Image (cartoon, rainbow, N blue to C red; front, side):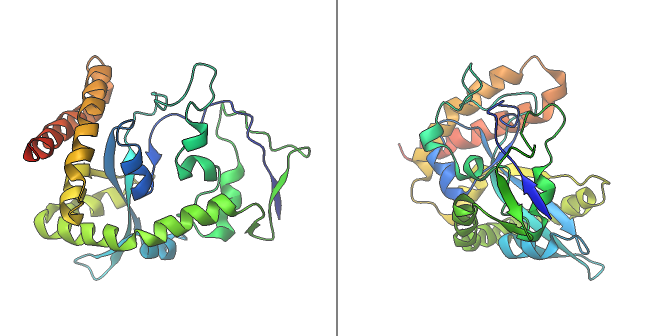
Amino acid sequence: MTQRFHCTACGKCCYGQLPLTVNDAFKHADRFPLAMVWTPLRQGSKDFATVSQLGATIKLANRKELAVLIVPTAYIPPSFPCPALAADNLCGIHADKPSRCRTMPFYPYRDEQFQAELLKPQPGWACDTSESAPLVFADKKILFREDFDAERQALEEQIPQIRRYADYMLKYTPQLVDNLAKVSLKPKGGQVVTSLSSFLTAIRHPNAQQIARQQVPVLQRYIEKTASAPSLVEYQRHYQAGAKEMQYLAWQSR
């Protein structure tokens, strides 16, 4: 099976949440409203093994397990553009954009053999998958793989931090397991969102105060952006709670 793909720079994929590596999240802490997003998968999912490797495995009371992706994320409503998206629909930080943007449309949280499914544009996207587009996938392998391999390597290198955070949260937030189990039962899946400040605390990041000071104005901007939208109340609550926690972290350094 072969797949062709070419980005037409339509900007349609530059909306909503953006998964980040830990390093990219901290590097862009002055730009994105950050959160930790937990996405559980039940046993039997084709991505279970890969998610177990890159994330964490949680035991349930019925002797079953959940594989959980735990990802630093630009926590942006689906109707909101990336703050780096320019008026011409081009990336305003192209030379310095996160690895997730460089790897698109491929996704290293998924096994390589399943990547062809990601080369089908979503409704409204203007990706070129015609016969004139470059061949990018063949024999269950990515052909131009430098960005994919770089992002995958970054994800593998951060596994100790992610698992340390998982252990911390499961110890101090016992209701998290029930929340993840409930979300995993939804037909289309779902996610549980926790704060970046809890991640900074769990891994004892040496620059936690600096990152907090960068996050405060970003979160305050998004509080203002979502204030008049009842449909975005969950985002609003996260931004408000996150801003308070980040203000506390920033205050600790003074």
